[in-house]
Image (cartoon, rainbow, N blue to C red; front, side):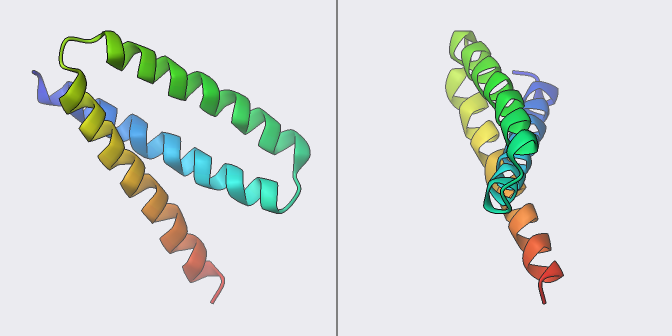
Amino acid sequence: MDWTVLLLYFIIGCIHDIGTTFWYLMVESRKVFKSGFVSFLLTILGYGVLGYMILSPNFIPRLVVYALGTWVGTSLVVYFNSKGKK
């Protein structure tokens, strides 16, 4: 398997969870249109990537790298958001 494919899944995982974490912040601050639009985009991205991943021959390595990306994405937003509130 090509390492660039794994890097792409990692980056997509980061982007997806950065978006998801911002979505939670928008819902918390009651931004109706923005949270709905971001939810729409995240659904398309998430299910699109998941469907493509499931159909790929190397499902498990791609899934693990994608999950690591989501971990990093969420951690980055929470870290920087908590720094901004101090």
